[in-house]
Amino acid sequence: MRWQPDPSFYPSPRMAEKAPPETLAYVAMVDPDQQQPDGIAVVDLDPKSSSYSQIVGTVAMPHVGDELHHFGWNACSSCLCPNMPHPHVERRYLVVPGLRSSRIHILDTKPDPRHPKIVKVIEPEEIADRTGYTRPHTVHCGPEGIYVTALGNAEGKAPGGMFVMDHETFEPLGQWEVDRGSQRLAYDAWWHLGYDTLVTSEWGTPDTFEKGLDPEVLLGSRYGRRIHFWDLLKRKHVQEIDFGEEYQLIFELRPAHDPTKAYGFVNCVISLKDLSSSIWTWYRDGDRWAVRKVITIPAEPANPDDLPPILKGFSAVPPFVTDIDLSMDDRFLYVACWGTGDLQQYDVSDPFNPKLTGKVRLGGVVSRATHPKAGNGHLTGAPQMVEISRDGRRVYFTNSLYGVIDGQLYDRGFDGWMAKVNVEPGGGMSLDEDFFIEWPKGHRPHQVRLEGGDCSSDSYCYP
Image (cartoon, rainbow, N blue to C red):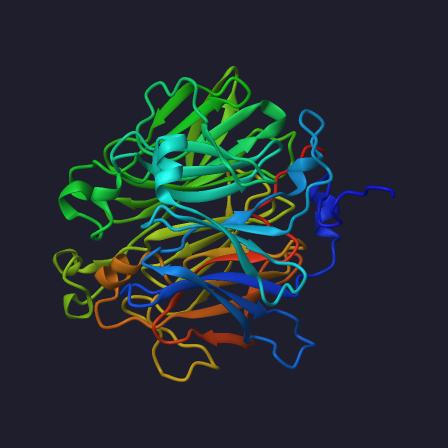
C-alpha cells in the first residue's frame, strides 16, 4: 500500500487557492439560555444542490451549557512542514471546545461528512489536571499537534495560556509555555512558521466576561491590550507590545499566509477615547517586532433612544470590530463591524496602507439592515464570525458573538442568521441574495469551518 498525504493538505497557499470549492460548512450553534445542548450544524454550500443554503445535518453535544466557540481541525496543511512532518494524519476530526464548560468534543466527519459523530469527550477535570488550564477558546492544527488557547488557569483565573493535544489520540499533553514572561491574559494564537515565532493576543479572565462585558473592567482598561511574541521552538516569551490604556480587547490574529512574510493583522475592538475600532499591522523591525495602526473605523452618531443601556450615554454606536480574516493570497482583509452592521473589505497588498474596496451592511444596532431572503424586515446582530473560501471568491459570516454579550448590545431581542458575499477578483463584493439561513430558534450561530480547510485554519511552510 502506498501512503499519500491527505488531499486537503497543500504545501503552499497558492496551491490551496487552486483547490476544489467547498461544498459544506460546519457551524457552531449555541443556546445562550443553556436550556438545550449546543451543537454543530452542517450547511450545504453547493449552489448546484437542491439544499443549497440549508442546514442538512446537526449533531448535538451530550451536555447543556458548553458555549461552543472557536473550534478547528485536528490536522491541516502544516503537517507537511519539513521540521516536524506528519503527512499521513487526516483532516478528519473537528476539535470543538466549550468555552463555558471547559469540555472538548471530538467529532468524526467521516464516512458521512453531512452527519459527523462524537467519538470522544474530554472532560474539564482531565484538561485542568493535565494542562493547568480551563476555558479552552481557540483550536489550531500545528505541525506536531493541536494547539488550544485557554482563557483561565485551573481555577479560572490568570494566567491563561496554551496547551497541546495529540492530533491522533486527542490526549491533552500539557501546558505549552516553558517561560511565559509577562503574559497573563490570553485569547487567540497564531504563528509565523518560517520565523519560528508564535503570537498571542488578550481578552480577559472568565470572571470578567462570563456575565457579560463588565463596564468597570472596560473603562478601567483592565481587559486585554497587548500582544505577545514567543520563540515557537523554545516555547519562551520574547517580547510584549502594549497598545496603551486607550485600546481594549485585542482579539483576532491573522498572519500572512506566505511563510516568507513576517507581518500580520490584529483588531482592537474599542477605543475608550472615541469608541472607534482599529486594525494594526505587526511586522518585523530589525531584530524586534513592532506594530502600527493602519485602519481606524469611527463610531457612528445615533439617537440614544435607539441604543442599548450600555451605549445610551455616548449617543453613538461603535463599530465593535470583533473579527477579521485574511484571504489566502494575503491581498484582502475582511473586517466585521458587529456594532454598525458592516462587513468591510480592504486591499492590504501594501500591509501598511490598506484601501477600502468593498462594503455590505446587514443588521447593526441601529440600522438593522435586512436581507432579501430574510423573513422579517429588520435583522438583529451583524457580521461577526467571518470565514473565506480558499480561492477567495466567497465569504461566509454569522451574527452571534457570545450569548450574554449579544443581549448587552442587542437588547431588543436576537435572532441568529448566516449569510454570504461573493467577491470580485480585483476587489469589491456583493451580497449573495440566494444564500441566507434564519437560524433555528433557541440556537445562535458562531464559528464557521469549511470542508477541506479555509483561510483561518491552515498554515503553510512553502511560499
